[in-house]
Length: 173
Ligand SMILES: CC(C)(COP(=O)(O)OP(=O)(O)OC[C@H]1O[C@@H](n2cnc3c(N)ncnc32)[C@H](O)[C@@H]1OP(=O)(O)O)[C@@H](O)C(=O)NCCC(=O)NCCS
Image (cartoon, rainbow, N blue to C red; front, side):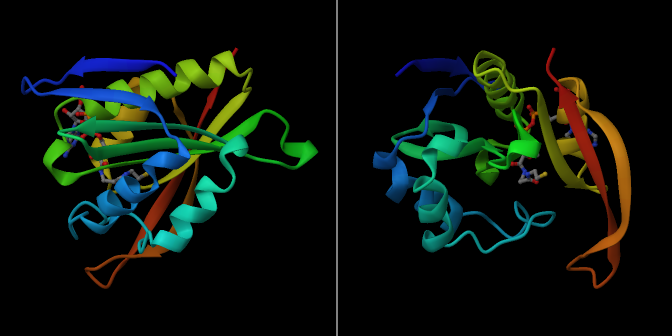
């Protein structure tokens, strides 16, 4: 399995590789260590059970993890949708540890994930993102995702207000 070395904007070097079953504990640890701020626009909890479900279905997952200091600090994955009417389409998600935000790791991981998806012959990558999640939207747009629609007031934030959710997609030609 290929391992890529990547130097981040702040000089730290991470190793990026495809997720394997052997990474389970470290992935659970990363999700357990995410700060409230890191999951402000997400839907925790990411429990060991939930992560085990992902890992029990690796054949339907295109997935990369980033390591720093032998710990997982980033997870980016695409769930390939199994129904024949969803042929070659998948939904993407990415979560980085808060100590690794805004130093280019998201850009590197999603770029590599798109490369893998192309190699696997995926036709479409979709995702949804809360409209207030500016760094995520900037990242997705930069890598070619387009806003396809808006769902109004789907997300009840910690500010006790409803927020909109954007549907974004990238068609791989
Ligand atoms: C969203 C996330 C994956 C982004 O990853 P990242 O490594 O921080 O992103 P990068 O540093 O590669 O790129 C972020 C971009 O957003 C920009 N950005 C940062 N804060 C911003 C803001 N408030 N408004 C607009 N753009 C902003 C950065 O300048 C950068 O753009 P650039 O490359 O043109 O300079 C990461 O912050 C994360 O894991 N957040 C928590 C979980 C989450 O929200 N996941 C997404 C759920 S849909």
